[in-house]
Amino acid sequence: MSSILKQSVNHSKALERAISFEELSYRDGMELMNYDNMHILGAVADGVRKKLIGETVTFVNSYYMNYTNVCAASCQMCAFYRKENDKDSYVLTKDKIIQRVLSAKKLGITEIHIVGGFHPTLTLDYYEDMMKIIKNTYPKLNIKAFTAAEIFYLSKLTKNSVKEILSRLKESGLDSMPGGGAELFHPEIRSQIVRGKCNGQEWLNTIEQAHDLGIKSNVTMLYGHIEKPEHIIDHLIKIRELQKKTNGFITFIPLKFSLDNTELEKNKLISTECASTYDLKIIAISRLMLSKMINNISVYWVAYGKKLAQVALFNGGNDLVGTAFSEEIYKAAGKSTNITILELIKIVNEINRIPAQRDTFFNIIKKYK
Ligand code: SF4
Image (tube, rainbow, N blue to C red; front, side, top):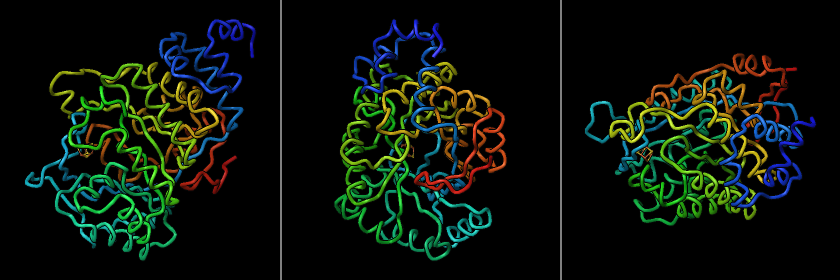
């Protein structure tokens, strides 16, 4: 570490502790949220990333399928949901699902990422059949499906326990779960950005049961809207605590709030997306708060764009999520979302790191250097 960096770090107890790989407390986290030298913070997070993970930047060849945009909830931060009678509402039929899986197969996809709205009338059979159809059509595909929030809703709707729902879906082919629906757990902020979705504790309880059944998952955090620093740190600590219990989280994916077409924008509660420096701060602090507990910090290029994603990889990130073919949720909020493996390799090569295609569980399939 350069002497200038050393001197600067000496002024921050939290950074000193981070460099020594000590577990950061809530107070440390708050200190970092208020720390305004992004160069130092980013450099420390980058150093920790190097020690924990090395120079490889991973990505998965993934295909997104949103089976329905009909949703009983109406979250203020969401541009995706429709009501059943809306002209552009849809539910994918069996035939459509097969078509989509065959398209994924042609692209050499290894993982299908499936999420949807809280459909008020679809029965559990629909979800079980979806899993079976996909497994029959393309057995090698890892089915990463249904957020903990969808599972919780389905449990309430069908009056089955969360465990029963998860067990039946696993039996039908579910391999892993995405990390969505976590948003921010703290009730003070959650009540202002979601309406009709499970609370933070219910999300955590649901994902814990999935982990207990051997279903690993990702975990996300939606930031860059109307949250306060304490909501970010509270969220990260709750994730870290659950990881100590289950070791079931695969990667942490901070999701930048995308403004267009959301109720938060329409009601003028927020008029611009957060600054890039805040994005980098969130990546860096996530790396430091989760250090040694979750060592994969994913940079979601769909939300950042390719150039900022490159910078984020020098502020603590080590993974680019994936190709995200056919992504629709960020698309509804005005972002372009498709990218090929070759483009991902180029992003990584340009910053002189090592591109590697991975599977859902971060096993390396192929290195490109
Ligand atoms: S975020 Fe999810 S639960 Fe909330 S309205 Fe959108 S689709 Fe529905």
